[in-house]
Length: 157
Image (cartoon, rainbow, N blue to C red; front, side, top):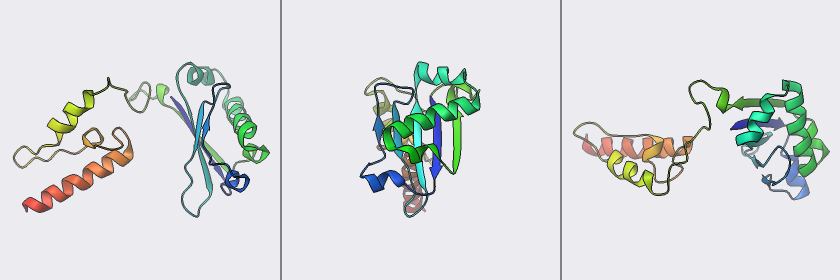
C-alpha cells in the first residue's frame, strides 16, 4: 500500500459540496478520504494498493506527486494541484512492514484473538489493536483497547 497525505490551506472540496471521499475504478488513485481536523487545514489521505502502488515506485518523487495531484484535481478540481505540503509512505518499502499497514485475515479469524486475547491472566491485562471490537488493526482500535484495559486495571486496584 502506498499512502499520501496531501495538506491544503482548507478543505476546499467541501465548498463545492464534495465529501472528500473518492472511490475510482480507473486511474492510479482508487481511493482518497477527507481526514481534515476540525477547524483546521484540509487533509486528503490517498491510498493506492497492489500493482498501482508498485507502479508508483517506478516514478520519481516529482512524477509520483504530479500523478497523485492530477488525479485529485480530476475529481475535486484544480485547487487540488496546489497543496501546502505533501507526505508519502510506501508501506511495501518499509522493511518492518513489507506490505500493507494491516493484514486482511480470513473472515471470523479475529474473533478468537479478541475473545482469548482480551481476558486478563492473573495480573496481566492484554491490550492491542487486535483485541478491539471496533477499528481492529488501526490506531483507533489500539486507543479503544487501551481505554478498556485502563478501566479493567482501575477496577482491580
